Image (cartoon, rainbow over all chains, first blue to last red; front, side, top):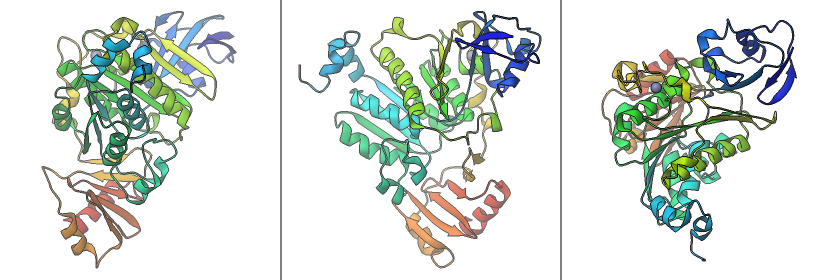
Length: 67
Length: 339
Ligand SMILES: [Zn+2]
């Protein structure tokens, strides 16, 4: 499947079917991530049930603590 | 124009009028590490009226790679970061009033420090304190600018009470431990890019050009060549306990405070005494000289080695135990040598 993540076209393996799995694939903790799918922000509780489709535009921002 | 701020005044969105506004403003920088030294230097050079900078730590060799106000001499002498920052900032711009505070910021300190402050710059290294800053910002209606970085990644967001979502809306829960306790290292351009985002937003705010604010959560990875920005306005949560109508400011309550903390990625435990303390460091040195090694003292702190650990005692009574993450061991050393 091809996704556009943070403006870049990337291929993800077929095991990545929803937003939770996508975050896992990139090693990002769900709790500290904000995900926008086709310009709509997803509530964290919906990451698991939100399926991804070819060509979806996704922005991922994750919070870090260092400074 | 050849005046000190001429280039900034020639920049149309600031101009003479904006410069005069900057001159009247008071900014609080919480933390004097990588982000704090960057922000403080930029704001002081820009001619801010007053800058308060607060930090609980002292300068170490590992700071010099990215904490731009410090020198080898500061590390050698274990100068508290707030003091070392103040010394340098005063030499960069003697027109700015600098207030340096060596202390561990809790709710009480923060509520005292924000008096008369127009803007808070986040330069902290953990979410416990950011959540306190977030609550204080809402309580006193003072905007603050979140910034953080790790590795080659950085993130920033400008929080305006009553207008944008707050950090508690954005995070839902405080991330603890591994996810944000940064041991991954950091390169200085990541710091500087976050500082650039934070200071630019700060300048817009200080000259009251609110229409030019970014209004987006921005993040980047300089090494992986990625950028992202998200409009998070819709995340504002009506039932948020920090900014909603039923607000309780949960992070300013004392049940959420800890006396003992393991410092992020540092192999160090910090112990805070209950109540106010003013340690006589000279007397303490005389007392400890015979039973400890490598004792070193400056006007702000005393350090010594014992049982292969290094203890640092600050005038305000705080103690850092380096070389362990075991809070029980740290407490036992504390009671044995510092009573
Ligand atoms: Zn909120």
